[in-house]
Length: 429
Image 1 (tube, helix red, strand yellow):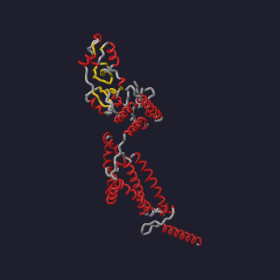
Image 2 (tube, helix red, strand yellow):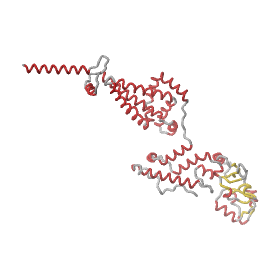
Image 3 (spheres, rainbow, N blue to C red):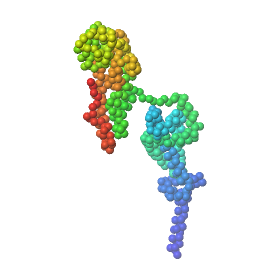
Image 4 (cartoon, rainbow, N blue to C red):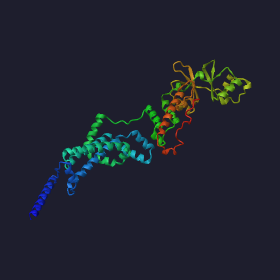
């Protein structure tokens, strides 16, 4: 009997201790858990009947992912290049055009957008430790909140926003519109103040030097090579030449006067003269009188096909019958203006005169203009062709080395497009 009484007393004591522990873990009327250790937190997890615990836990998770979403959207929207979006609108696939349209509607109001997203982000971050403090101790709630903010608000959102920014921003525009409506009363005055202080946001466009650098990167980029979007060296030269031609003038493209084959007005059309015209294959030949700077006009070589060299007729007589007048242009005339005139058929050859002395210093043909625009300087006396050829060869070698480091899975697909060592580059006549 004594033993039974002792066992009963022990069981009673154990029951009391369990009740005391249960009391310490119970929530107050304010649904505040007074647990002060991680062990108490684990014990609480074993009590599913504690409704408010799960409510606060779900709220903490919602605020955590909400802050991460706001952070990812901020990175996604403001990492978009407006120029890139314009390109997607014009040349992208249907899905890219749809994404770009949605994003650009919101980017029209950048100040309101950034204020709204940051307000939502800050509100979610502030609520995290407050809600978590109802479950664990305040000090531990701050530590847990700091870790979750570091991971789910900084690292992951920024990585996702950087890699999949356009898709994420376009698919979450509905959430952004709801956020703007919710924070509009506070966000609108702040956005208006920013507009007054900082001014209107300006779209960024690439300068000529930047475009040329982008073109070179497009040719040598391993990622572009893997997607078969690389540019050939010839395409690079043509595009760079077209960009550089804006600053070129007639002096840069002309053939110097001492390198031009001309006919003397007082000469004769003998067999030697005819052989010279046939061997050089010119379509136009200038005519001078007395000295080379005194230009009389020009012959179109096909007009002379009926002349008999055995007759040894005077060039002056033939000029009166077949000769044509020449156009004279200043040496500082822009190359694109000359190209427009030649493209309209106003002339095919022109004499270039020095604007200071008024004397003829060279001749310009349509071929010379096209060579400059296409980045292929073939004019005698110019040394740009050799340097451009060496530059293309260096770019080409760099592209080959980079593409060798790519995975070989796509080697069979684009073997016909890959650059090889034996492909001809750029021929300098």
